[in-house]
Amino acid sequence: MATDSPLLVLEGIGKSFGSAQVLRDVDLHLRAGEVLALLGANGAGKSTLVKILCGVYRRDAGTVRLDGEQVHLTRPEEAIAHGVRFLPQEVSVLPDLSVAENILIADLPLKRTWRGREVDRSALRDRAVTLLDRLGSDIDPEQMVHRLSSPQKRLVEIARALAGEARIIVMDEPTAALTEHEAQALFAVVERLKAQQIGIIYISHYLDEVFAISDRIAVLRDGFNAGEFATVSASRREVLDAMLGTSVDELYPPRGEPADEIALEVENLNFPAALHEVSFAVHRGEILGVFGLLGSGIDQVGRAVYGALGPMPGALITLGGRPYAPADPRRGRDAGIGFVAAERQREGIVPDLGVAANLTLPFIDRFTRFAVVSRPRELDYAQSWVDRLSIRSAYLGQELRLLSGGNQQKVCLARWLVEGLEVLILEEPTRGVDLGARQELYLALRQWTAKGLAVLLVSSDAEEVAGICDRAIVLDRGRVSGRFAGGVSPADLLHVSPVKDHL
Image (cartoon, rainbow, N blue to C red; front, side):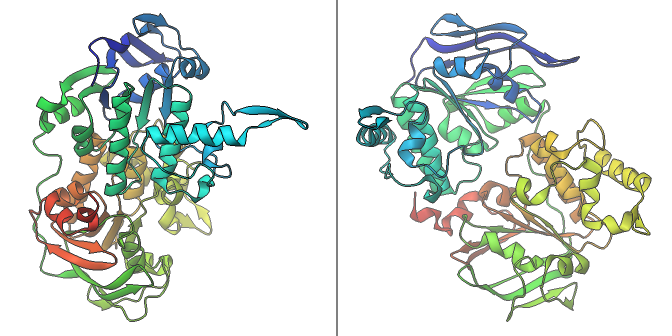
């Protein structure tokens, strides 16, 4: 239960970088034992505000108070000393150390021996067990961290924060790479932290989980406070309106009218230990959703069709009415199939190349003459897509790693929207993307399906599949366990997926 007096108060926070003012008179307060969801579109100022709290940036204006006393957090070490811990979206652990060593890395218990001072292994284990027990976890403290699952690694991170006597934990997109079941396990840990009077600032792009786990919602927009809501009485629409700055009737655009013509038909698709006799068809102008938990086969189905998993013996596939045999990604591309991978940072972008170079990468031969790239043609083409998709970058040569996640994803989408594309395969298209960018991406998809493009959308987000897709299939342990027409609800999708066995 949250206490009445604030644990943390931020008042009048301002921050500029050169002539760009990023935060303007921002207020925020957090009580002990409370989960405060911090929401906002990319560029709203969330990251800057959190970095000020964590001592990474120095504020230009305003005050920070902990337990009513003003503090100056000018370095991360000072924030940690005051009990402020940050858990980034990407899990940060030392894979080649044990669970216990990761948890107590900043304060390893030592003992004197004839060889000198050494780590007290018995005390190390006992302290780690005590901290893990606070989280309801029975992970073996002597197990090597690289053997753990993603949610277990996240637990190790949280236990490490508790070892440092954390009083405030900032969680940035903590469920981005978790299954529904794993996310529910994390929520149980959050409830335990609340009971221990730890204040939590929870950053997420998933409104469903925000409404499930938070006590209050604070929204930033363009560096200002845009709204504060008690979760129990707030509506999704008013939160979206605050985030986007306009009245949002629906996050998802209206569905179109798919053609009768089938763009892609797949029969008897098999892949060892992953896919078993999977069959489906996608019409021109249609978005077909493939929903399932991670590990249900959705990780392989799009890649199998594209050719990233090699030949698919026994499968009968037609593309635009013509036989198509997957072999490799180049054949898939040349046949008219586009593919946007779920792991954007690892497989989707070349982070140190510019926006223009990333946009033209799969079809660079279209901008090449005598083995030389025509920079004017490349830049003109890239600029047209920057304008059409409102890609926010300082200039076309800006390194892609410096763009927000939503703008990176727009680049990944735009590079495939070329002449001759028949089917676009999207894996987890809005993972880690803010709601404003999601709305723009969904609108762009609908604009292209209206021109006849067929889209195979693979996602573990039931809300997304229900909201944007014309039809959907559900995979469970590599087999199709359900088929749905338009208008399906997220609950319908979850009902035929293995999530119901784990909640």
